[in-house]
Image (cartoon, rainbow, N blue to C red; front, side, top):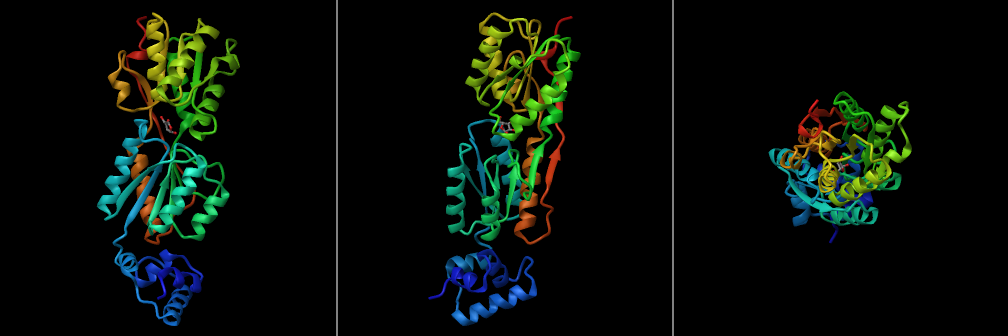
Length: 332
Ligand code: RIB
């Protein structure tokens, strides 16, 4: 018995296009519709339960593939995606890729079998082949936060470069005279843009040296270890811009264990705006990303794509904001 996949293959279109013709919703050009109906008649195709599900949009499911849901940045992002999806009648399934390309590719193939409606990736790995493959199998997708370097994707992210400059300027305004940077993994564009923003802001100061930049891993332990390295290299540093809040909490922990007073000896500014930044003592100054808004926009754009509306394949960049707290308020 012919399947929806046979119809799609004979008509030279994707499964989602066949389901749009079957349920007469979403955009399908007249020529394509004619080809699909011709294939249905030639194959004497009758929608199976799954296809009927597709036809009636019962499989209205969006996948959200994140690096690691354990990092507190991602749950708020996920909440926003799910809130929007639910109001539009879609369910959301989550997956952790650990930032690994092979896991992301495996997810794409599994989700294709499950007639997924669309995918939101937080991925720096997606390459030209992945993008072409997703287009070929007609699975609409949006890249959120971490994005591949090449063109042709719909990307929602915050302005990491300007956010880094904002952090450095705030530390200077707080009275810091020598500012270091603990950065995230440089294969991730968000970390890379923040490092570039830091360098752009400090490169002309006479105290600047590349050794003021210390690698971290976007995790608590990475911040703790990097702070140790930094104190050995530059014990006279009096300000640190940290590439995300989780590492900033780690750095704070190390400095306090070394008996260093934050902020009076060393001021610290993080990046993300996760709730944990308010739970530590002193409370952490941060560059807050519009996390919830990013998730809402990504879900909105994806649902528009799924339902056949025209969506610009471009970068949608949202502004960040400084949230000053005790970790940069020196007692003058
Ligand atoms: O904390 C996780 C980091 O990875 C965040 O800064 C976010 O931008 C993501 O890229």
